[in-house]
Amino acid sequence: MKRSDSFLKNRRQWAAEIKQQTYALYLAYKDPRVRWHAKLFGALVVAYALSPIDLIPDFIPILGYLDDFVLIPLGIALAVRMIPKDVMQDCRTKARSEMMVRKRKNWVAGSIVIFIWLCVLALIAVTIFKRIGD
Image (tube, rainbow, N blue to C red):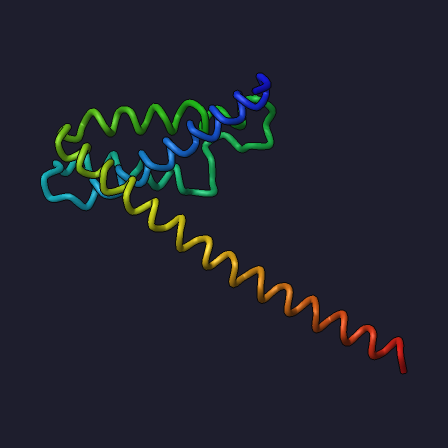
């Protein structure tokens, strides 16, 4: 494996881990065993992670991705420390299993969307060929 392939694989794993941790925090937010201040902070971290609006806009070179690579993981780490370990472990397990189910659903939904686009393109092609033939 080339070094660049390894780098991309590690980045993908890191991004998947951040996504899973974010979802686990969301699940912890809904858990009644979590204190209100941990729920509030966790909700803010999840909202910021999912928000299209960044503290530092992405178009600013280097600094633009600072929040994605530093602030979000730091926020997740702080929120996880506020939540009881057993609750967080339950939420991680539930997040892992639910995300596996969602991956299967995404393939079905994606296949349906691709099929619809292929039908639309076929309809456009047939229309164009009919007009050319007339």
